[in-house]
Length: 396
Ligand code: PMP
Ligand code: GLU
Image (tube, rainbow, N blue to C red; front, side, top):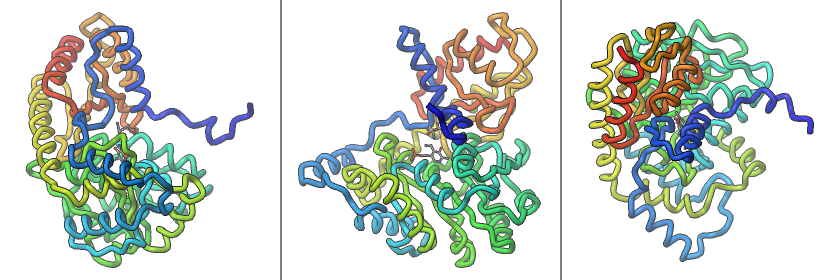
């Protein structure tokens, strides 16, 4: 059958593909140390699971309004007010099937052929692909390890043309863990206002911030900034709810209305049961978030200590999220532990999986050749075994 030009050029998500490759090996009976997918290993907290069971038993098993229930929209506004002090109206919230879907809605509402979207690299794999689906052009702006992988105001301004429709910002960032300083963010916000450029601020890792870093929502720098900001967030990471598929946007009312129209045609509404669970997550006890963060913080410490033992590897210390993104290019073109030689990060990951049964994601997928991503959203024993395997593989 003839495929559309859009899907002919579309690659599968590299994170999901890497996880599938690791699973294939596991299914053959091989013990694989898996660090591919960015998803918490914890089961969703009990009070959230109970809310979903209750929702089913009480008959919340029907369509809901396309952009989400009034109850969940209010819960999103209340949680945002609690976290940032900002007041949003439920009419400014659109609930979708995961934050990935929210990002698609933002791009489909704002961009089309001939438009440009600025994306700081390294970027999450789906950013560029989702821009391309709309027919717009991703304008990739490289950031450096020295800057902590943060886009500067000067870089942002230099990338703006009369075709620019949006900046896609991710703070804290997947894959680098970069957490912007308040000053750095404010400088970007001032450029956005000066040049009238909307900003999609993907804040899905806002609750996963480590000591020494601080989180500030992009919308908090004044009404003029908020009027240009579309916040993306969801329950996947903070509440260990990746499988429930609930994300949302907080945006100016006209953009929200456009995304609601789009979603009503595309998919009706996100799961009624998952929406009830998300209400429980946002309005219930928040200790579960802090408990999981404590585990992530211990794992991060462990990962950083193991990486520090490996010579000729560099990284910017992650201030947030649950990824370590490190440069392995010093190991290219030299015999590794198994005698193999690799020349790029993709071949490095393939050899690492084949020879040491350790699964990472190549930096090539994130617009950062020479780097690899390790998700530490997994237990310490797995991390230990994985690092033992990596060290042997590198034979430093
Ligand atoms: N944004 C970023 C930066 C992510 O890493 C992810 C991956 N989970 C998402 C959005 C999408 O999250 P969700 O699972 O809610 O679709
Ligand atoms: N966002 C996660 C990751 O980067 C989940 C997989 C995906 O949706 O890409 O691993």
